[in-house]
Image 1 (cartoon, one colour):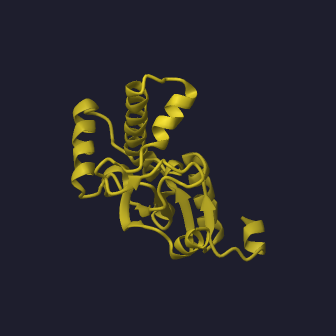
Image 2 (image 1 turned 30 degrees about the vertical axis):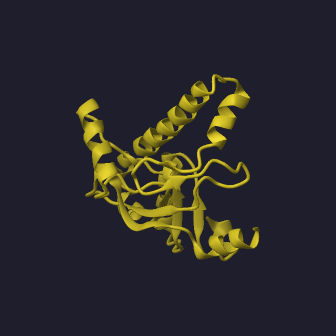
Image 3 (image 1 turned 120 degrees about the horizontal axis):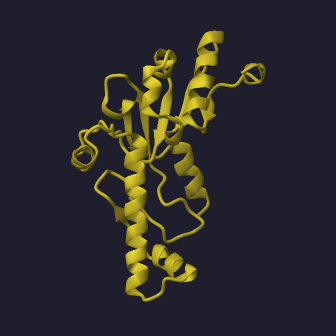
Length: 188
């Protein structure tokens, strides 16, 4: 924290386990460290909102490849309904939503590899490289055809909240940062 402050950091991006995020945000709040904090989706877990650091967590941002589990999107609502039917005492979270989409991506690629009768490493890779528009109905599509490019450049910005399903509310829908779009355009 002191090193970041000494360097006059204007923001912090953190990726780590939820306990590390809670520790960092708690220390930042206790020491008066006042710069925006952006965490990646895997860094956040809903149980953090039941800890003493919850008020400080409600001031940070979370970058996610998918909308919040609390989203009004039909695809997300379907996911939450299916999750609650399968796990009545569980709480759907961003991690379970992302895991569900990753599983669907994996199944899609493996099905294509099976159709090509090639379940070798190269066969599975080639099957994935043919997926140019993978869309689960959650608002973002993925293009796996170019191994030198990210499958999606869109990011949702979420914020921890004690009052929403999954502990994250959506504050910005999927967008591509202007600087990223300009950088990618310059590489064409």
